[in-house]
Amino acid sequence: MPDAHASSTAEISKLIAAIRPVGDSRVWGTVVFTAAGDGVKITAKIGGLTPNAKHAIHIHEFGDLGSDDATSAGDHFNPENHPHALPDQEERHAGDMGNLEADASGNAELDLTVKNITLDPGPRGILGRAVIVHAKPDDGGQPSGNAGDRIGAGVIGLSKDAMSKEPAPPPAEETTTEEKATEAKPTQPDTAADSPPQEE
Image (cartoon, rainbow, N blue to C red; front, side, top):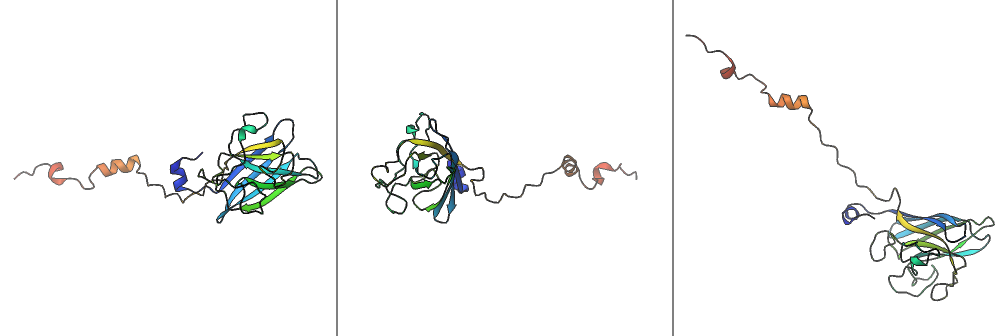
C-alpha cells in the first residue's frame, strides 16, 4: 500500500484484482479498475463460470481471504450505508457491480463505469478490499442480492503501472575526480611564491 507521501505526489490511476477459485470452483480471471475522469472504469474477464448463467460480482469490505469460503472478506463495501441495489440504481452499495453473464464456455466480461468509488485508501477507496464472484445471480434483493456462495475472490492491489508518475528532474551533473583535482589547483602559477628571488 502506498504511503501518505507517495499518494500526495502521485495519483493512483489503476488497480487490479487477480481472481482465484474459492472452495472447489474453477473460477479465475482479473478485474481492473482504472481512473476515468471523475469516475472509475471497471473491466473484468472471468472464466470457469457456469455456462450460460449469471453470477453476481461485488466489492467486499476487507481484503482478508483467510477463510476457506472467503466469508472473511466481510459484507459488501458500503461506506454510505445505502440499501443494496443493481448498478442502474444511484443509491446502492459502493461494492454493487451487478452480474457477470457467462457464455457457453463459462467465460464472461464486464465493462462498467461508476462514480461511487475511488482508487485510493480514502473513505470510498477500494485499495486493499476484495472482489468476490458468487454462485448465483444478484437479483437486487435485500440485503445482498441473494447471490449465494462465494466461488471466486481476489484482493484489489496496485497494478504495476498504477502510479501517474511526475516527470523526473534531470540528473545533477557530477564532477569527475580529475575535474575536482583541477579545481583544487590554481589556473595560474603564483609568481610571487613560485619564482626565485631576483638578485640586485
